[in-house]
Length: 273
Image 1 (cartoon, rainbow, N blue to C red):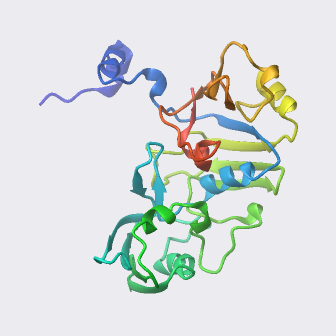
Image 2 (spheres, one colour; image 1 turned 180 degrees about the horizontal axis):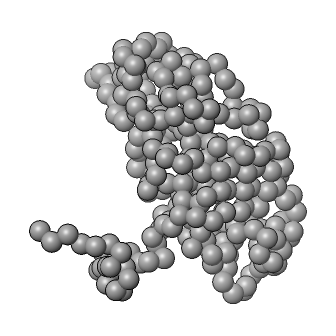
């Protein structure tokens, strides 16, 4: 079999034809680098994005609604969906340099049921009542994994296993996260070098910040301030403008729809063109 030189493929322009044949485009291809800047209202948006950037959960729900592992590589249950076992990644590391341990996950699941470590990377969870939807439930940001005994707040001291470590944070006002080098999701998520979230309470000012290039994404902006603006895209539509996005931002083809800001995963999933 002839080995394909990827650099030569892209340089020759053949990549565009190849991507077109598979239904993709160069614009759909995530790129590394840059700072993704978001303007959000004074609600829970800053915390949702910051949590999605800094922390991981055992499972996550992809934009297409499918369930996949995050810190868990697999899980099994009995016929009654009451006793569960989870296998954990062996390459996840907290931002303070400590590797993920099974006790860290046990601490999170203790409020769900009775837990037991079966091995250094495997645990057992026994529920009081059957719950076939448990893996979906554990994808919620309520179940982010921290070092055993540590709390999620304050944000400036948050210590997770996510793609971004906290560089600077003011609770309720500002967050700046820097991408973790050598993260286990490299090549799959965490495209921007840095993610900055700025709280701007006034929707008209958020729209103005996007229009004038101070931010790349504005959540729930004043529509009158940017409707018809060239180079700006709207999600899910111009008539229902939950997000206004600069043309410099790459968006996944599918965006999780349970909440604005891609279910809080926007920091990991979006990129700069």
